[in-house]
Image (cartoon, rainbow, N blue to C red):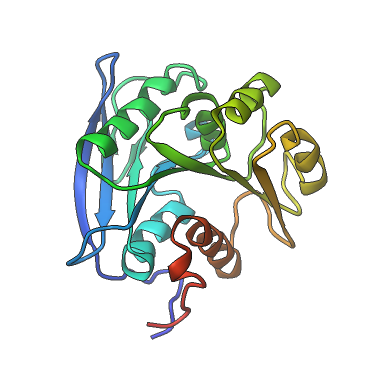
Length: 234
């Protein structure tokens, strides 16, 4: 069977709740490999909720649909404060990336409490800002940034990640609306361990199955290289 946009492969999928230090309950889902433990974990941070971003944004939905089966990864998705999806609505209100620090912390605490292994943070657009600003946690092995705009995240945040020392991979579309590969390489030069990967033909939203496969395979290549390249058929 060829893997297509709507393909859903076997996994253990369970609704979860995250509880923030400022008293909010956030809704989410954890997808785990069926019948075996995960080898690593993706904690995903979604795009801007005021522009349609949520835990079901298509790259993350497809990651949860495929990667537990294809790469033995756990995929944790959740709605940041005030964000709604089919799973429900997280309490609170959008706070322009500031109060969301507690949301990131709650997701990482969930992963730690439930003994999820080898945590990598994956941010997309607004989610990359949250990763750069708030994911400096000893639990985190590294971060993968998809379409980083570097709007809210400043040079100070990049310097903080440089000092944090963990791997940082930025996948930057050739035709991104906000930050393109050449400028991204200049901005991320502040982080010695950063790797900027320009993706030919891609746009900010990574629409189209070829780009979805590139993103998922680049993630797996870093987090569980033994499972890369991902198969296109099962």
